[in-house]
Length: 221
Length: 221
Image (tube, rainbow over all chains, first blue to last red; front, side, top):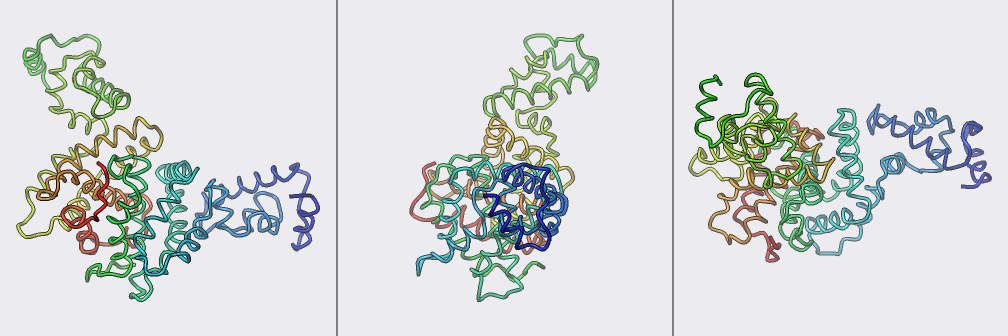
């Protein structure tokens, strides 16, 4: 970003960008990402705000918006995710060919996302944090609920809305376990299986969790 | 263990217990567990041997057998697991009431094991290691394959044996994900759900993975 663009971003905000402490965009971006990591870690995903992150980075909130757009994009950048989950998932779901069952399609989509560069490392880093600190687990929980299971919930339309959180959390549990078994443990059959085999085996499960009979005893959600 | 019992253990072995370096049973046990952790970490679960662990701890292999019985028991002690997985699972499966579907029973059994004291901490510790080192991931993979999925494989009897590893790895993936979502992420609906709700929802999935139709495209195993 050039100085003139930053000045333009600054003019769109109520207060001027504070300058002087850091030289250049990369320093400013780094300061914002540091501040974001601190805020997300301290307040969780829901509790962190662009305003508080900007204050901690000593920049104008408009600049944070200008660089990153949304809180989720800022989170993705701070956590070094190679993509913005809700955007990728929403786009993929919109592209689903008519007639293709949601479950198998979701499994294939997840596998193709996970197999792209940088994803495994980001997953390992975030999961390791969640295993180390309650606060990081909270952050990941809120992020998974909102950015990943949020878009998936649209696939449960037509069912009792009160059951939707339980349904999507079953989907999330299964997909998390698949990622763990395939990429971290590397359990041979699941790690070596191709997308067709996994979609055929797991797809119908996901369909049932989304819209099928999941038992009379619906969990409180 | 008293001195006379240790001597008895020693007499059963070919070479005498080496003594002098450590005082008392607790020191010897600690040395064996330290050696076990090192060997499992270096060679994986399959590669580690009681003999090599004993050599590293500077004790007779018979003493390790005497203290811990089997490699799995030694592993469980070294990893501070509050139980020996294959023994608990095998015993639970033998106790399954006639007519109760295997899937729901397996989910209930897993939940009751996971809810017992010390299990969550052990799970966190082992998983964190697996996320930190390839070697620890290998160790966990081999252990899960042998001690957990081994007994579960008996539930897939009557199906094509070539598919069994894929079937049990699907079960393992799902259950790992459930543990992760319930105890680490604490995703609200899955974390708060009672055993009835989870058994009703997930049980039929496990049954299908074990003995049902999992698609024509069987994964290479």
